[in-house]
Length: 217
Image 1 (cartoon, helix red, strand yellow):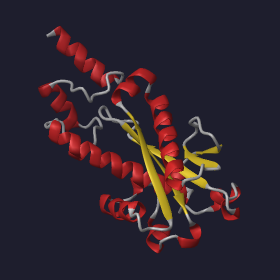
Image 2 (image 1 turned 180 degrees about the vertical axis):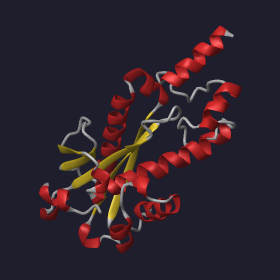
Image 3 (image 1 turned 60 degrees about the horizontal axis):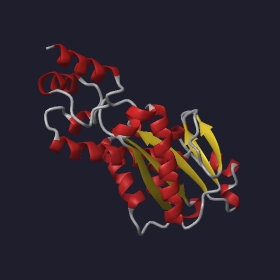
Image 4 (image 1 turned 45 degrees about the vertical axis):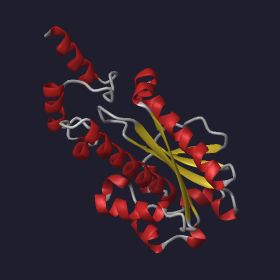
């Protein structure tokens, strides 16, 4: 289970502002990539957060929603969060990795504004680092090791899932409210039936293939 070990290594227990960063939505065929930044106060950490936070993919949708409600509550003294995203256009122009790093950078900047103080160190899920104005450490499987990254993981996942459910109302027939834009059979069938939308990532092979197939008919 994640804990504060990595945060302590970066001086979290000595007053340094250490944040966690993670993203959601690198693999889907449609929609933006969303990143989140999270700062947790171990001295005031809510018991439900301490016991429940983990890699968002390991948690049920209800558990993620419950944790998100605590993390996003303005009255919660133990956490501050922020999100950033990169658009479909940026994904296609930069590639999905660089767009994900850009979204993380934006989330970190937004969190600095929310904290009224610049983060002094960041723990970043994965093996690549965004451009940040502070010390940063990449942590493979960080959402299973760091509570700050786990919090960011939950925020990014819930934020993006809700955004895709809202976009599904504008573009029905692809099942985004259920598949979040991933390449499921339902999504593939929607592409074949309805075609490519402005929110599909044209740099992804299945979408390129769908466009080429349409051009040949």
